Length: 466
Image (cartoon, rainbow, N blue to C red; front, side):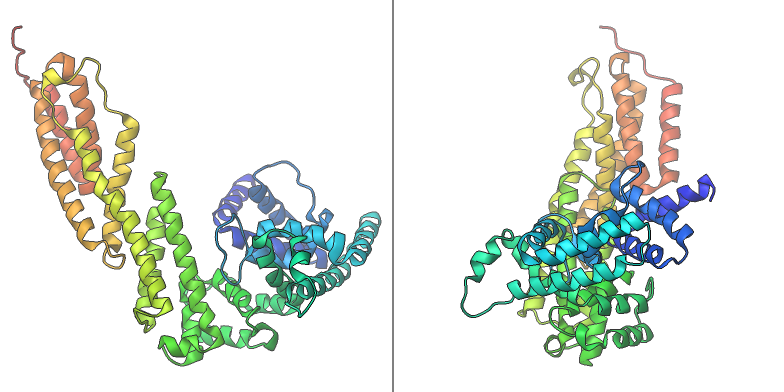
């Protein structure tokens, strides 16, 4: 593969969500172990590892990491950080304490047997014995985890659990054990799912429903993980609610909630809530690069749940959705309200006597303000569904009127400015034209740029004698 093709591949892989990257790594690792398409699988896997680990250095093969091998079925469901997890998710940070407990107390004999099998595989240089050894220890680990995580009458279960880790680790125990127990069923489902579902319509819903119709996947513990696999393939993950509506044969939330697939609505609401929190964090940090995409996803998800489900305002799901909309609205409104003031501070035309010598317009502040104006424009597109319609339309209209008048006034001021303040006026005009491009488009910005050039090259008023 040429360098250009390799770079294109890495760019594509780098744009994938972390869960999709983990899913690809898992599938290519299995292909190598089965001896299928090893050349292509090895190459793509190498590129994925470089992206995920953030280095071009030679990484240690994953087959040398026993914990990673055993917990490989969990990869599609792992989440980073300490934020609340929903059903169908597992904290990555929980894996290490669980692994340490397994080899120390949970299944020490099976762990030693597994380590011995790995040593034989490394020594022989063949992988034929690897997969059976992994599966055997996964079953032993799952049995030990489920046994200690399942409440039992009598005994001192809480004391035993505290030996594993803190509360957030204990919360993940039963999900970890359940996924390991159902590895074969989840693998089969994974193989039956399309790689990507741009449309989730009747035919796709029927196909996915048939693939999910496996008794071992219908339990309260496993169904959220099966649905999470489906959500990772959807172009719009919120559309997983369509599966629940189909199974209930109704869009009434009471009938949907009465089916096992009602959990799909909970998953969709949680993901929207998490995205709203991420949006709020990005806005506070001044990171607007992905705001447009986040707003579109939130807008489509909120509208989808409001239109495709008959939600009651006083129900649990109804209150959750209302809370999400309010959270988004509050985060956006406070930032939107601040934009006109920032624009006025930059474009306010002060008398020459109030401009100190060497005054400058902060270029970074201009960049930030232009990004904020663009942010208001993006919000205007999705304002109605996100409950910010009034403030967004008012702010955008005020910005257009103020920037238009200020730009014309600043351009005219170039004709009468003295030498001491001319550079500052020019910087203000440049900022104003930048804002015009965002608000009115390139043509109007070019028109005002030519007007500024004419003001500078045309006849200027003579300076007053001091």
